[in-house]
Image 1 (cartoon, rainbow, N blue to C red):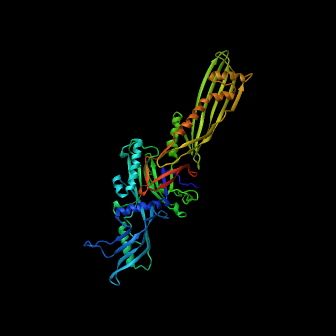
Image 2: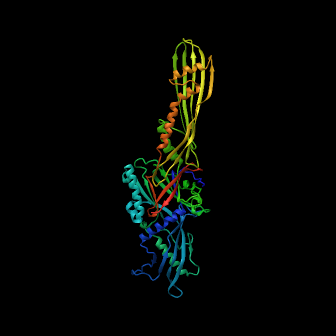
Image 3: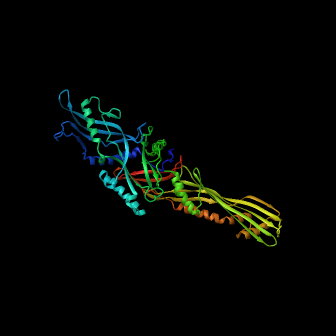
Length: 521
């Protein structure tokens, strides 16, 4: 499986739905649109005359469900090709040559035209009139989110995505492709196209709905880290693999604003989102892909967990790596027949880094300890008679694998720990003035209040509190992870849902990825 090279920098989230997913949803959208237009399985279009009686000229036909093609190379942003197919029927038209009504049989005629996608806000009552099943799914999503967080209704907004059919002019030659046999009389052709154009040019209540989004309002209460608060949509054609062409929801999370140049940000996402092999069953069978910007997961969610576990320590960012560093020093003194001084420094460096192409994060670093032990003769003019300058460190190596059973809204990330703290080894050991260096080892533990007899034992005991803190911090930070996607919902036509699975980090960008699976109602 080859991950997309699209990196989320201007947007926080992308739900990219493949052409194959859209195809499976269009049947529900078509049924809902026909119900609102009060259309039967057999379409009968006979315009009314001025006296209110039906015209003898018109069209009777069986229609196939509307097709929407995302693979439109060189199209404008958010532009798709719509195809309306008449399987069978008859066109009744005026034959000027014979000055009488005539009929032309319909046999698999079609007309394709380019149109734009758009979105508009809607309330549940209006959505219920457009698509009752989608409205119920949206209501359920809001009720569930409210129950979990105790939120009022007004923190949620609903918007739906629809086809701009009202501007479809099927008689213009520059924006459509008509598949009607050439031997069909021109008058029959014009009559059919004009009637179909009139059918498509409908009011707001008859919008052809392609999807509904429930999201949090950015300005009311602080939305959670993974809550969608605004979005735009995008269409990306993949000519070499049309099934992998995508309709994408590009969103901002937790109140972050959308980019000022939305079109430029969309154009920058040049690569395909989905590997074609994940659509035909050769490597998988998915409906789409959910991507979340790595900085959202790492910096806005995971690193605050670490900071809390490590007493508020903030990390330094370096590409895919986040580094925590802390150092502390202490000095002690004792006196018998001579003065004993020790200056101790200990600390750690902890690196937590995304491992691209996996569901794991590498954990590396070191715990280190150094000290300078000195012996002085007594008195104001005491002289240094002996000195031991030593340092050592213990490596941190390993990883944490994150897995999840997946779900539709909120699911935990189960950490599998596979890392270790190695043994201390010396990196510096310089002594002077001692008859036997080991003589210093009996004094140093007393000054530090620890046990230990050898140099490595002293450093191990002196830094044991740091090792324990890091072990607890790693487990605490990783054990509380949950991908809470319950504060927004993407609702397909007809009220289906999307489930998400196969958590991983992109091998190309490091962004968090989940496969999207369409579940029909």
